[in-house]
Image 1: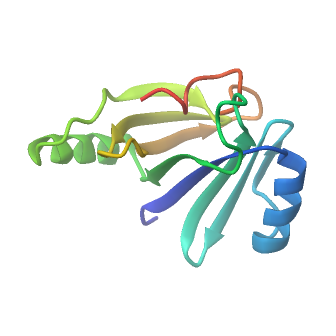
Image 2: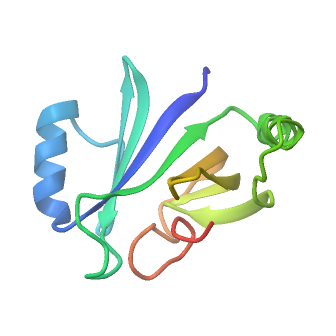
Length: 140
């Protein structure tokens, strides 16, 4: 599998957004009461939707960007490469987030746009979403 771009949006109304993106991309590959994920193959993209955590966040705004890679080894390789290039990626951590067990790290650009580099170790039916009650996708 090639790396895939991941985009996560905070939305005001998950059901309305789900209807729009289902018409746009087809059925989601993962659907929970507080989360939906679409995966496209051309281009290879993962789009996650979750309710905005608070009224301080502007619904429809970008939550974060990401690059999904194949393995923990690839996460570690990219982490080391970015450090060698003078960037300051966060620590590599294992998290139960977005209904999946992931190995990941975060990096922030000069404007505060957050990127996660991650590998999914296991999809889960239960667990933490990226919604209002969790911080896995909100803290860098």
